[in-house]
Image 1 (spheres, rainbow, N blue to C red):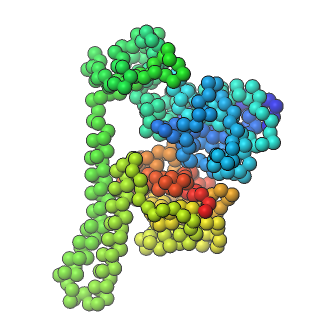
Image 2 (cartoon, rainbow, N blue to C red):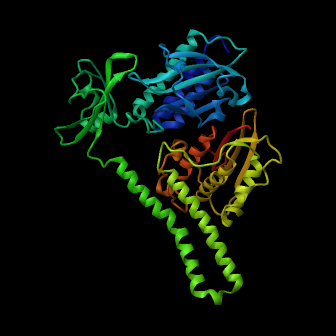
Image 3 (cartoon, rainbow, N blue to C red):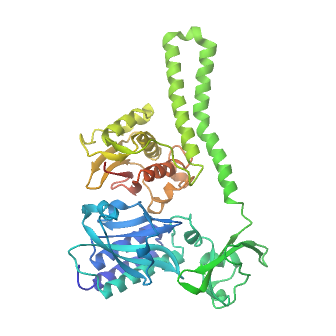
Amino acid sequence: MPERPDYAALTRGQIALLDRINAGETGLAVLNQLVRLAQDVLGGRGAGFTEYSPGHGRIIAASGACARVLGRRVDREDPRLAAGSRTVLIRLDPHKDDFPSQIEGGTLHRVLGARCEIGGLVVGFLHVYYGEDEDEPSEEQHAVLELLAANIGHMYGAQAGLPVHGDGPVVAALSDGLAIIDRDCIVQLWNPAAEQLTGRSAAEALQQELPFPVPPPGQVLVHRLTSGRWLKVTAGDLPRTPAMRVVTFRDSTDQDRRHEDRDLFVAVTSHELRTPVTVIKGYADTLTNHWESLGEEGRQEAVRVIGARAGELARLVDRLLSATSDDGEVGGSPPGPFDLVDGLRAAAEELPADLRRRLVLDRLPTELPKAFGDRDSLATILTELATNADKYSAPDTEVEVSAEADEATVTFRVADRGIGVKAEHVERAFERYWQGEAHDRGRNPGAGLGLYLVRRIVERQHGWVSLRPRSGGGTVAEVRLPRG
């Protein structure tokens, strides 16, 4: 680790970031460059950024030795992250922390981290990793990391393509109206969504009294603006800043999201089930009405198709039921050691014939250390990833399946040569019901459940899954499971 930060690299990096932002780039593309800048300037072996959701975080940007943990879910309740100072140096214990062993080489022993905040709201954590033989980070390095974390906080406050996820009170508040007020209800922060909802610009709202009442903590106030718009308003104290309160508000005239999800689930269910049910009924009617004329070979073929489609129907029902609850477990067998390559080959045999023909499995290694997880779940995981690859790539291109192992994990990848995944979509693609833009959906629009289900299944096995653009065009889906 250098004694001082590389200020020349910091200056060049900040200018490059400003150039990208001024050119209209936002979101993960800029965030990834900022994370890489933190690693380079502070002499770390790797760096990453964790975006927070309720009760947990997820690594959405990573560089260097941390690149392999992209997409990993992490605990946000670690008391070491709640220190009074905005930056904190954490010593990693290999006996208590499984995270260091999952990073490339498994030789990282310290992490210098900084909270990324907006008016006291913590939206994430920027971290740089160091080895055991490197010096303690200096005060200057703490200060530089705090500066870069502040830049990330500014990106979130400006809603510049962030947050990536919208499923938590802190993160969701950024897409809702958000105000920070003092005890006299004088506005100290006013986000862009607040401007749009109320019609008041930040210049008009700052240092002025909040234009609507503030409900007690834990209660919801419904308030009608002079424009006729109704707002649902909630409020709470800011952690570590008792003199300030955070107020969030949204347009309550919109249809309740739960009703939208319920209606969408009904539509998705009917869409997904229609094809196998139609085929089963058609072949059953054929057997009933033309038993004699079909002959033995025809009857055997009809029964085979009915059996195959019934199996497909059963898997679809499992998928749809698993997707209805955010808290329920995804069904599966108890985890244990298993042969990943053998499991992948068996799972490929269960794919539809057209998709199976596109799969290239001959690059799988002959031997790998055993993975630890639910072998039976590979059929669902590979089906979803291969179907996704098929959907977004030309029918005459290959879908490659590869696998490897390192000190802590066993990995397999499904790679296509399709239209590729946009940087801003690599995390959103795992959200329930989310789909890309209409012209990005390939030949079959789908229902937006496959990758959501894959992530839930993999994380139940203490693994993680990520997407990334493929060099030369296309997309790579990567699944990492613990070694057995």
